[in-house]
Image (cartoon, rainbow, N blue to C red):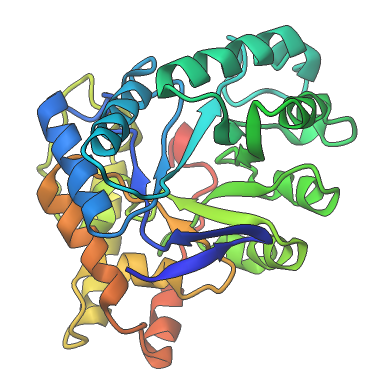
Length: 329
């Protein structure tokens, strides 16, 4: 497992991290036994960065992570595992609209109470990284929630402060980075969503901000395992993400990528992760891991050689501008 600096901060993280949404729920049937086995296998293979959130099973993901780490400590394992979690805004529009008020959606009392809940679920006195789970450009001129988080940082409740980008306006966090409000950003960056390479990733590097990449597999499509006939249970997040004709359109695009990879020696899933890791600003990529086989497959990618420059150039043409994805065609 290779490691990378987490921005300007004194921590080198595994370039393959553990995305812990699926072990909390919303991705089909999942047993705690499988989740714990996946966590332990990933950690044994060198993963030292785990990403979770309050909303992943209403704390279930956090509690499983705490359980796994406590068991490993009790077994005498001496390892430094960095756990990042997220606080959602108070109930309201998601993502926040331009008319939402920061002091209502992320009020100080709400943030403090939520941080205490995160500490309790993770069984720790200090969060390694607390990220706001979404944001809106409307709050950039007076980002009061980050002032509260910096105070909590000063009080020792939080190590680092970050933000997870809103899907429709990821560049809204650029001003936060330049203003020194955040230590890390979590972004969507993959073979289809390449817009962060235009400016966001370079700004993060210039500002010494750690970059966590989510959705590297485009919610599973970039593993190549879906077909036009694939169906998801109603309670599976992907049944909504790939609603209507979205899956059929995605499968066509995936076939195009497979053609470019023919004879390269890389599977689609391997190339998807290597494409993300090719950008020097990226600190870690956090594919969702829900079983031992996925832990082994994802971690093994770290030891593969980088994508050749010529292949990287070919893959860039699969950038897919789908800004109206969520509202239809």
